[in-house]
Length: 447
Ligand code: GLU
Ligand code: MG
Image (cartoon, rainbow, N blue to C red; front, side, top):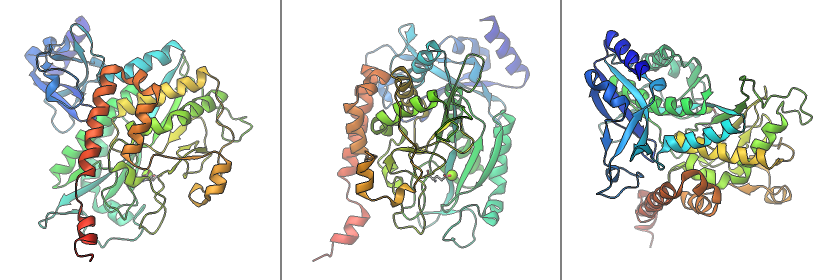
């Protein structure tokens, strides 16, 4: 208590006048209440109450006790673009105890299970997203007015054209100590990737949540918006949010590193076991790391574009090979889940992969040898011979896999499992019942 009083005094001395008690709904969208700094000590002990029934995936009845946000002091961020406001990631509580169906609590339960086994999960999320502006015609366009390239990946001129907002965002990330080490123009029109140093899974989930909010705010200052829609353009690559995962021991040593790995991936036995656990549950995990109708339009080999998408289509793992759902990058010591996309609720996604990985370790699973071929080019007979399954092709298939896998209910808890699945089934139905432009164009005057 004294510690949080001291923190509030320090914030106030720095000019902070308001605090945001923030948490996410089931989609990973930020929700909050704002509290003047004079009341911040009440906020830290849970004064901010919310009617769960007003939100997606906070399973509550209208007459239930409200959920209360319990801010995590360690997550405090003074908004780089508005320094009189401080943001806090919060856990939801209800009835004086952590609320079971809160995304952050769901991840914390798996973090605790990992800690009990002696592990800390480290996570780096590669942030890909589009920055676009609305056009008068009701569409959207990139900020650079240069012609659209067939292959804009790593394009220098378009990167430079976007520097005003990009450097403002990167400066802000670095001011927060996130250590951005690289950013570029990606393969979509107005698509960018920003890479920053990994952290423990909970911290990274907080940061990714905040990043979506911050990227959007800064883009809007520049007359644009940041889109974390996984596949805004059918003929271009989509936005992944690759999860780079490893486990550390109590002294911080990376337990996934093994330079003498006989399989040549520089991955330890523990890393292979974790990988095997994730592979076992990948169809169910997909529902959380690729959680939208649109997500599954990203998970194609090529579609109508000129090159590959670099997004996975099969549930398999490989060495430095980017065509696998799970990749062990050249340096080894970590596993990259390439199936995850920019719309993930990072708390739920990380909770599912961590639980699956821990199961792989507990059961000593082995994923077999890594796939070294270009998986996009293998024929069905070869895939069958290797026992490789296709990833879910639609949100509907992913939800079926999620519903059928006992891991999902165990990780989510009964209330969130039912609520989340109910909302997602509705989302799929709403999509299914929608008549798209594609259909009208194709069938309206077909006969
Ligand atoms: N944009 C690709 C995806 O959807 C990833 C490209 C990359 O490897 O950076 O996953
Ligand atoms: Mg990329």
